[in-house]
Image (tube, rainbow, N blue to C red; front, top):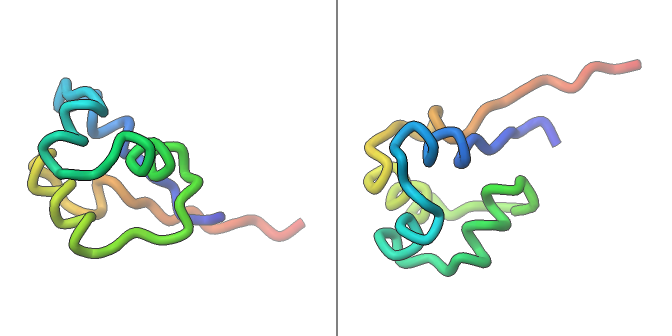
Amino acid sequence: MAIIINLDVMLAKRKMSLTELSERVGITMANLSILKNGKAKAVRLSTLDEICKALECQPGDILEYKSEEIT
């Protein structure tokens, strides 16, 4: 997939644990782990909004597009 999730980078920059983010946002640890590991197929805008509020960041700080090279 060409979408990269940089949630772990933002958590490190904010010195916040996944557990703390889970509590602040109201999302289970399991679902946050799926998102963090890039296994999520979709993310609700309301969820992204809550994550951005908790981490004081922009959606582009978490989501990154990398074009896939054709070989």
